[in-house]
Image (spheres, rainbow, N blue to C red):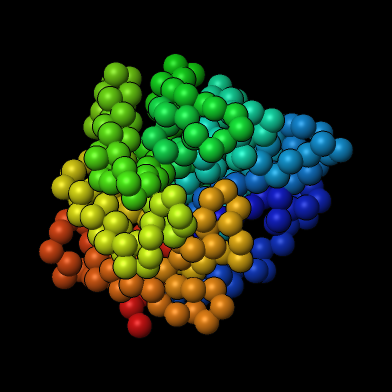
Length: 304
């Protein structure tokens, strides 16, 4: 689940946790283990200044950022143990005005220290990298390659416990493309002396559109194939599906068709049944219990 600093503290020093408190309580009662993704800054805290502020810009002062992260981690200590620091920071849309591995590393360090101060036993997850942190997003107006090696060069290695990627691939590319993306990430990690660290798949999903998935049945088959492949690798941890339901419209490419359920009538698609089956502890492949139990409100679905 995403926790937006910009939504909770619109005015410095005045924080509203009412909505988040209720959501955390509800999810905790279901037994779902929660991973919180810290994302966004308030206008007053933006490095771009209030007049030009963008919610996905870096903060003006890392001290303010760290204080917010600590406050949240301490508030939900015992209920949340997994903290992801940002989302797709190697992508133009999520790190304005442009991806900056040095600046992100500074934010990551501040957040890591804040989380560990609140809970030394928590798990800090690197913000999920678009694709694999190596290749550029072909659909982005700003192409960013080899971001992960640049993170390591900036000193990020010691400031996260788990590396996360979003290895999306097209139907025509198939599992071989997924394998290549994961391998690219692992090679960069090994080169940096970080090859033993776990890798989590904090987003994967498939859009139904002319240049990709043909129908809902193929969407489900691709998801099963992806999970079966990923679970063969002991370095791969939890897998998060994007997303619980179809979005109202396509934003970056097909989000209006990617859900486990439809938006209007909340009909369960074949991919919902596939997810549910794979998430059961009795699922024959490794990691099923992790898949079922680690996620957020939009990614983990309790059995019904």
